Image 1 (cartoon, rainbow, N blue to C red):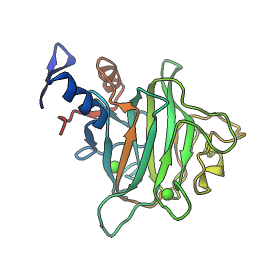
Image 2 (cartoon, rainbow, N blue to C red; image 1 turned 90 degrees about the vertical axis):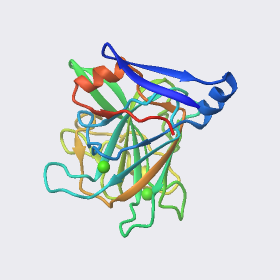
Image 3 (cartoon, helix red, strand yellow; image 1 turned 45 degrees about the vertical axis):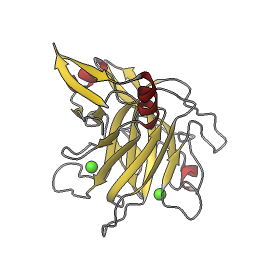
Image 4 (cartoon, rainbow, N blue to C red; image 1 turned 135 degrees about the vertical axis):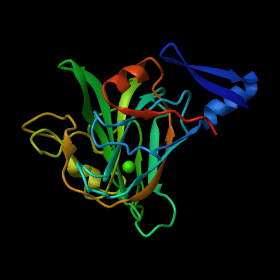
Length: 242
Ligand SMILES: [Ca+2]
Ligand SMILES: [Ca+2]
């Protein structure tokens, strides 16, 4: 496979030389994204924009736990494009055998336009994929009896945090229903909050360590959308396919 990425007149273009057959196989397998280098932030304003073209296979990164300045590294947020809601799936688990083994929780937010900017609205959450697992898994629908469902392609925010660290709104209220803490349950937004369901911060630091997320139905954010997000202050880098 031969692929080249280049930037032309401010937009990202991709030149790929592949047979149709191998292109299909590549699209299915997808490339891998690594957070390494620049920490993915904890809100929509500091989320890392995944600008890779084509479908994604995995996202790797680290919650280092460092909190010397600002919000520290206890949550990583990524802006992605859901391309196939039916296939949408994220599975997260610890990576490597370091001393710090993260017990991950996963959160999905729909990105909407509001008040002249972009906001991240609570949709789905999970702590443990099943009883006995510390890994987390999200599919396209809530399984806690709510009707939350990912049925629209488009821009979403994925957040991974260690157990004990939950998203909160501007009033500091938890914005996901606590049913998601039960093993195997994908929870929706909290039943009742005084404020809204928008990600503004986190309840507390959580566990930390290296992680990997295997994903389906997801691609990077294509240009020119990625360029617009960069203008908002999101962090982005490009990665060549492996
Ligand atoms: Ca990080
Ligand atoms: Ca977990």
